[in-house]
Amino acid sequence: MKKITLNEAIAYFDSQVPNQYSREDKTNWINELDELLFNSIIKDRENPEIDEFTEYSSTSDGERELLVPFMFKEIYRYYLEKNVAYSNREITSFNNAAKLFESNYDAYFSWYNRNHKTKEAPSFSI
View 1 (cartoon, helix red, strand yellow):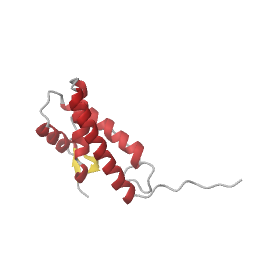
View 2 (cartoon, rainbow, N blue to C red):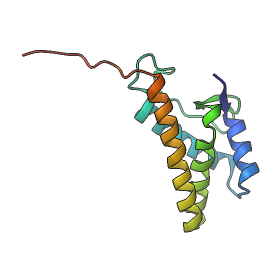
View 3 (tube, rainbow, N blue to C red):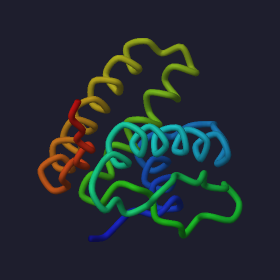
View 4 (cartoon, one colour):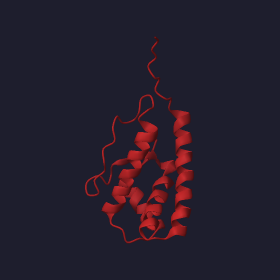
């Protein structure tokens, strides 16, 4: 399944939402999001694609694939957009981007949940 790269995510965001934030800022926000996705969705599934999350470098990981498949790339756009709006103190824009992020997060979670079984918890008896 095609994944979006760090370069693609940042370029797509910049084309949709002109902003003054550095590549490093955007990479840090993407790191926050992918760590959240790994810890809350991916790591507790059978046969996860990765065993642990390793942060992306804004200078050397441009072609590295992010965790989310291309079909859910909007999750990155709206996560970055809500962080930019929050940093700019644009409350209406923040609220709109946060709702769109939540919608995309829920869609990704639902898809992932349908396609990846939860790890079986070890059973024990007393």
